Amino acid sequence: MSWRAHAKLTLSLHIAGVRPDGYHLIDAEMVSLELHDLLTFDDRSATTLHATGPFATGMPLDGTNLVARALDLAGHHADVSIDKRIPHGGGLGGGSTDAATALRWGGFGTSPNGLARAGALGADIPFCLIGGRARVTGIGEIVDPLPHQPRSITLIIPPLQVSTPAVYRAWDELGAKARTGVRNDLEAAALVVQPQLARWRDEVLRQIGIAPTLAGSGATWFVEGEVASDLTGLSARGATILQTHTVDAERATGPGV
Image (cartoon, rainbow, N blue to C red; front, side):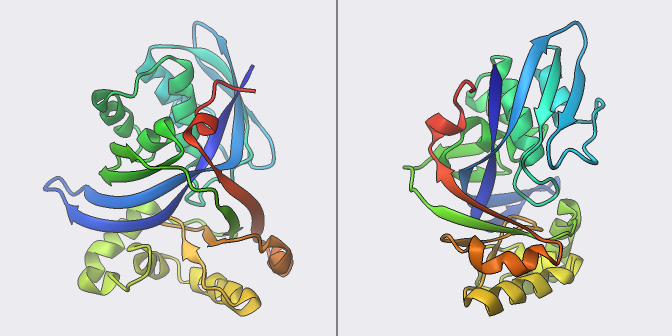
């Protein structure tokens, strides 16, 4: 049986403060998307990973992979096949949702302590364990479910890589100038780290008349609605354009397909 690992999208993100240890406190609204990877697990005495699919290239398959680390946390080993359908490096939580799926397969719980332990692997993993729609606070380990709201989402994923730690450092350096009134407090910092993001944002605005929102620390831009057919020109310039929709927690955390 294959297990779905659904992408996550950060609809809004505000930085609420910085802890003494340097970790940033967030207040975010996150949703699960129908876009998903597929994972299959076979119990083994040691963990091995295999990857196929359109976005498998460049994916680490050793002990640094979050799936391998999640299985260690859950106290399991497995031979894992990952059909990689979520673009990596775009802020859609592809690695985190794969890890959450491995934890779910391993019977890992979602108590506050369990979510905190999962969050030590990656800040998006607690939300991916809960799925659906939620308000996410703390450093990502506090997940308060919200009612599902069906939404159509168009994702615009430029051929860019954006370092999340670098974006948070830039946010620290920008100070008050980082708050620009947009739905995502990290947007201004991400544009400092990767200025080419602005070109893609402006091109989306030019083509459809809607300003996109940056997903997390980037590099994905998104707009609500079904507008992928109006952005086909961006595909020829290297962007990945995906049409998807939100899913509820039951779908996002289901046992598999």
